[in-house]
Length: 190
Image (cartoon, rainbow, N blue to C red):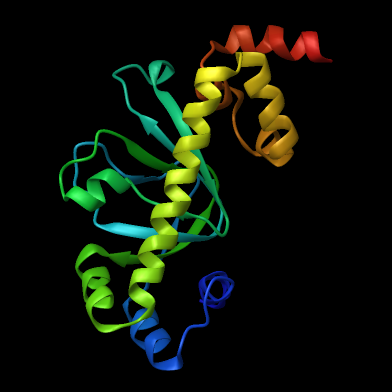
């Protein structure tokens, strides 16, 4: 639990009493590689802070090769089917562990209590929302103004470990090309 407290303390010190209430609401959850953390069509009940592991966000399709991967989250980041969490309506996407993953999660109802009873509550909500917004905004920007090759090179530059940890079929879906097109991009680059 020190990971999440250290993360929050970077932005604002947390009083011991606020931390005690907040940490009492956190639930440690672990998932094995390929486990579905959140299913599409279900209301998201958690915001989670990844303490270890890698997670992908995707839109499921009847044929798994047609799934659309639109995001990845890593250690020391928040993850959620956030629109579903906020609206308390079924999500249109799913969340999957790409490696053995551990996270600290807080439920919707518990977070509402934290908002009402602590000074830290609004900070946690803001940090989560900002983190998820920035991730989504960067993704949208890359789709609008970069070629698939530029998106691949950007991933390679910003997160080289991603290329070692994540299946190429998920990376190709993320940058918006077929696995065959990704293979051609990789050949051109090397």
